[in-house]
Length: 296
Image (cartoon, rainbow, N blue to C red):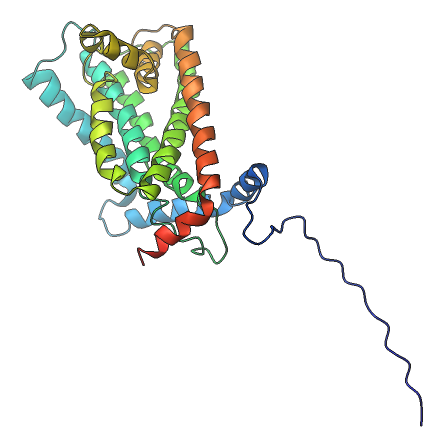
């Protein structure tokens, strides 16, 4: 009989750099890298939702421009003409429109993201998505659908009497909007985390954003609140949206550079909540999926 030689053993190398120990937690930096790798999915998801939102309407995505115009008109009639809350504010129309348009974007980001992690389905794209992608996706969608309103705002400021003559300070509106987007994102992530842990927080959040609106000087100057008590003055001083609106009005209506202190406070709020919120979501990553499964 012919004697067979044993087959040579093949050596296979497996890259285990991205594998975690069972029951272990992925490192925070590796987690952020995973989130970054989902950017194409987040962009595609946001674009798809915006496109689908106008498919069943005769005017389609033109409503992205019409809605902010109607909102501005309603707020002007109610607060400017009927309630007459101008209170000596120069160009109250522009003051009001800037407050309404910018704060609406923040409200949509925060309230829209609140239930995002609780309802999160990690395998929705055919793979395992980090929970942090849920509020990121909501913010991307809100900005994609709402950014035209900022262009509408500039046009309205130029056309509605008393029309503003924009100075070169208008270029500072770009970093102001970037900081606002980061503030929105950080607070959205924090809100999504706490609502995922205790869903009842979502009810309190909607009341809180309404109080936040009044404390940000959307429709009238916040000075009237700051004078009521030292506590209110402290809260208003550290309110990031009060500084965002003030800075936006400075560069558009008043043609001046925003206060340096305001830049520091906006930058602090752009970084701290996003960092803390990301850490909280990373720490609780394994528990959010259970909450999402309960909604199926």
